[in-house]
Length: 108
Image (cartoon, rainbow, N blue to C red; front, side, top):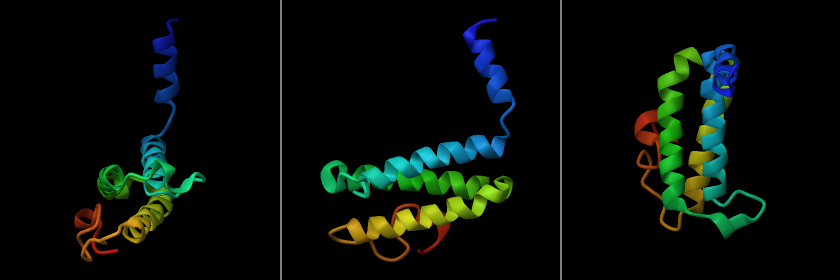
């Protein structure tokens, strides 16, 4: 058995909702760091990058919502928290409904 076939077998056993949730958690973690929410504070802050990550997260969570089951609410709540954190971290906050991902999720 090659390492590739072992990895394929392992991923085949994971439900799609868990794979999607895992990807969303990675996006959330990266966005939190880019918003300056890491222990190091603003040392990794990059709001341009955070905007991209939050928008990608909003697209994923919005598109996958019907299939996420028990993961849907926590992911939606995490996304909204990041959207609010982005607004608070911005020196010139976006207009309501214009923040990262808000075109997909609605106003936060």
